[in-house]
Image (cartoon, rainbow, N blue to C red; front, side, top):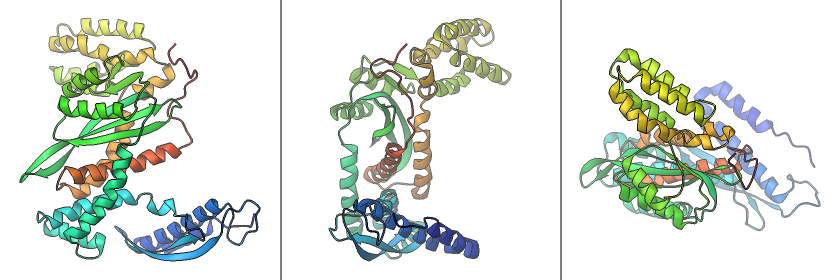
Length: 393
């Protein structure tokens, strides 16, 4: 294979930043993105540029200019072409869905007349021009079709799923409301993570959770062996209705947070938290049960309300003990969703307020779709199953 200096584009980008600082950030990204697209074309053709190879499956056909407006400014790109026109670089399309969704959310606010001077300025910076309702509608329709296909795609066997919700501010009927963003992640039969879906609703009421879970089931979700979530009443009721026979693990992190509400004195909080951690990190369920009884006896007089709550609540965090020890750290909390929530929060802080549920769903779906793609291409499994047919023991 012909010699190819893969570090040259990186060196060029570094040199630009070294000499010009942040002023050259857009130019540096342009260099790296153009290089990534060329490398992707070479991989598609199974040959480097001008290389003679028996494995070659096609031929390059120059470049097409493309001007891409981003938060860094306008990038002047050279998109590689092939003679059969079947190639389009994923490095260009990947990451742009959430960028477009964010832009559309802000643009909708501006077009609908609920924007401020700040929103107008952001739109002009991101788009480089004024936007019209027709432009927003056309762009939204194209993106929504792609995201809807992802949200309704067929699922399959997932051994574990994690459910959680976060809240975003949405304008509806002249009011600003807190809308619930329901999210489901799963671990498949090979031990890999995936984002199964999301839904935006006006609350975490049972009817919304039930509709969301039912949709997952209708899309072919099966083979569940554990559901991990907090103890929100709407979620619990929906889970029992849709997946009544699947074991449930209550998030231990939420349990520890909830315990603080029943501690009567500040100086008790640290020892109570330490004792609960010891229960949850016990080597097996028998030891956890033993430590729980000691916990109840220790705080019977000093914190009777804590004891009353803990006697029923803490055992809901013990289900994980029936699963392999190597899986417990992954399954004892809803932390699988933490990165997702951090990324959603980072993007929605820019928009601050969504003009409607559709705009919120669009941005959240785009972010989750990109993260899901990253997870699917990762080499490392989230958990390792030693026995394909039986995980317990």
